[in-house]
Image 1: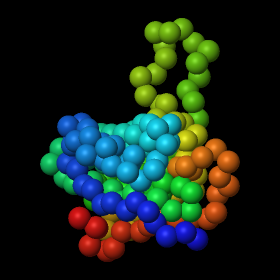
Image 2: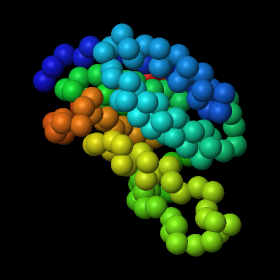
Image 3: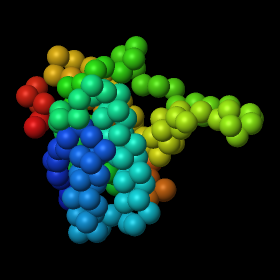
Length: 163
């Protein structure tokens, strides 16, 4: 296992503005870590979807709670861990990420339902757990398409929620 060459902890408010602010702080750091542009764009899209889901669903009744994010680059991957103290995932599990039926009239297409497909299709080692400290979601994004998954490299937050 290689040593991390990028390691950052950020947090944001559980609002659209908070999510955008976190992404605006994070993205300029990635070139210094040697992250290819295509991988950086994938990270931005997946992390935006992840954080917006947390803000919209886990904190549907407030926009002043915090979401913690820990990003580490190692083992030829970007490892992401997201922690929040919001509502748990329904059924305490990840949605299946199946695309909605697109064989319908355009007016009948659902507004949502594409996000978990996107997250699942662009990540590896996707895991969710709920404990007394809240929700923990982790995943890996390979730095190149030739990388094979090498097990779980994602970090866990300490019991104090990492904020």
